[in-house]
Image 1: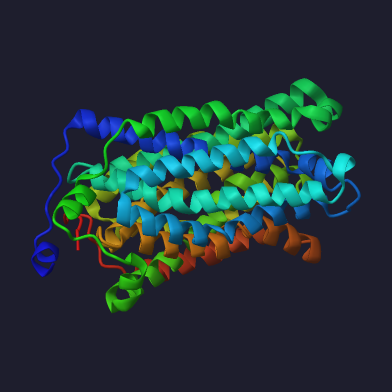
Image 2: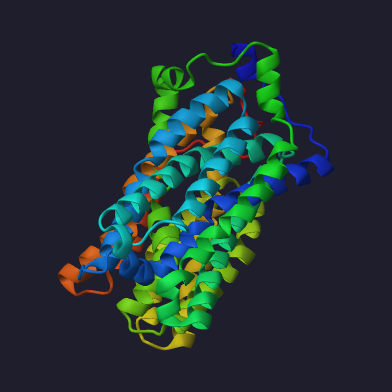
Length: 436
């Protein structure tokens, strides 16, 4: 094992295979994260349908959203163990099947008016299934893409999956907004809210079809053929001081995700509508424009990290967010749509330097033997503690303090946390991935 670790084998993947694998990873990510856009935009409608008698309906919807994140680490552990033992490809087919079933099932749930408290309980159960599957998806898909990527282009190739994640958020938001506008509040609450969730069926089938037609990664196949697979990957990771340190870094480096993906994008439509008194259409316009901006910026950040290293790009993004977070939220809080677009787009471009690079840096922290398990555990614990709880935390703090600047303060604090953590990382951008 020492020889393999000391002399990592560079990947030689032909461009056609690399493109096919990238498509498979991106389609799966799109299907997996599509429901975040639905929840972000339809929190008010879902609150009326599932918590009609509560004055805190939106908070309860985001509580259900947050609960699912605490099952991500479990999904990361179980799917990671199997992914390191039997292969990345098999697990990626399984997780996309699971989340597609869970998301579509929400579309056929009975309402509170029909079955009472059982309705929100079933909603939370489906969210738990979604959380479990996403916990297996994130580290698996990113490991899969990175282990297939040509040398010198890992940052670029894995960044495409992040574009897919934001496009799925945008798609879910646009579909929910179009239905809300076309059907009106009454019909939306009667049956229209079901339609976006049922669209997960064709999305999931497409993802499963594509993923079943691709082979496993060169790194995993090479390790399997040499008999080098770990019997218990997570136990092995905890037995190593190096891997324990890497898992701790994988927990704290993604801190900025909490204020980025989960507040700036997923929570933003609800925040602008309920706290800043923008109309739903205006909130959608601001969020959609910032999502377009980040999708354009992400591949440039991924490519830049291939050239100058992951640490420089991530540190630059964290410093920029710490400086610009409060001024940008002040622009959003002016009530002016053009100024809100400007503030949201500036933060989106800054955040691209984090989200476009974070996953490849985490992939490179671990060798193939334990990558899926160890990366999955660290990242999913971080998502549970600082990501999925962020919309609920923002809603609670704003309600308690009356201060709508809470998201800005959260952006600055999480950026500083990421900056401190990333300063402790050894940059492996210009080295082949380790197998052991």
